[in-house]
Amino acid sequence: MPSLNPSVRDSTHELVVSCDPGPALRQLFEQQRPEFIAIHDVATHSSRKLLAGIAAAAKGPVQKLAIRRQGYGNTLATLSFVELPTALGPTVRVYSTDAEADEPAREAVARALLAFSTLGVLFVGEAPAASISGILRPLREDMIAGPWPNRHLLLLPLVVGVLVVLHVLLVRRRGVVPPLDLPDASPREPSTEVQP
Image (cartoon, rainbow, N blue to C red):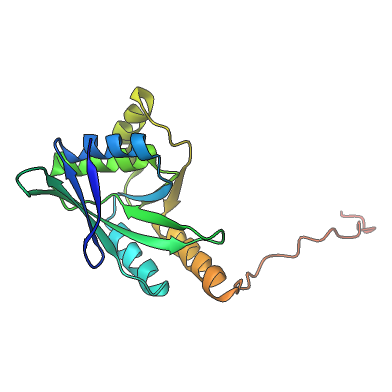
């Protein structure tokens, strides 16, 4: 079973494992059942930048989770995350699935984070529809094969996602809801004019 060391340095945590990072995270999540949000990039590389922006707005650090091989100390993968306060008191972690690791480990870590997250957010960059479909196919197959306890995936075009995050930060930090110019949705009096 992987063991999680709380903090080995300022804003760096360590997970000591005896297997590859993806299966180790799955074991940890199955055992502890943490609530967290996973941000995944599809045809873009912006989730770590987004975490840095969220951390700056929340006046907190981007933290790291280093996954190391037991007995050797080799770093197999490093994850970036931020901890955000909630209205109920405890913090919620927001992870980027863009791990610093070799390609097979990065993919396994991303699948584990998305599968066990409370909410998975997929930021979709600009790419042809056929390309996006091909990129999402392995994710769909993983969901079908299981285990996949997460039942909440949100697909956001990158531009909309940035606006949503900025809106949430404004509301949380300042209690301000930016004005939205929407057409008047009030019911109108029926017209008595006859149209030709």
